[in-house]
Length: 153
Image (cartoon, rainbow, N blue to C red; front, side, top):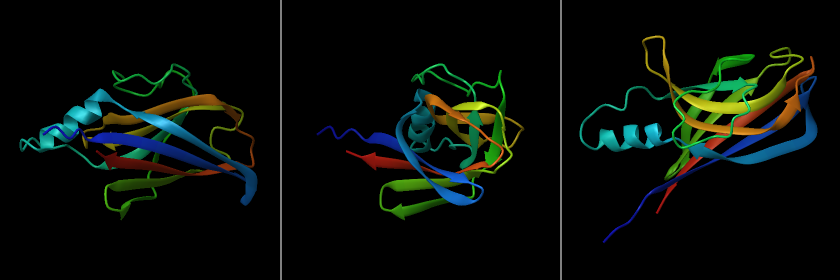
């Protein structure tokens, strides 16, 4: 019997203006990279996964997400921020909560979001990535975000 496990992800952005919730909530599906799937599968053989999900990358990269991606686009303006919380709200679901503070990346057009594992040696491993049409970052814009990974047959 073959029961494939699917990993799907949803990123939710709640745009805040001057600390007050804005009228806009954006949702998008993300891609879990091939390297992330390999790392998860390797844990079943006793090979350590490495590090837990730890950071969010927000930047200006515009290349569409692809299964073979190994890193977010760091050529343009970007920021790497620690996750506020990583938890399991229900069986088969992992949620990463994060935020972009007002004043971060002001003046940039935010297009790329990536979920990272900190490998502990100063490098990151890409887990999930998504790009979207630009969100222009004004000085008073903050974002509260959640990244939900669902494991299902």
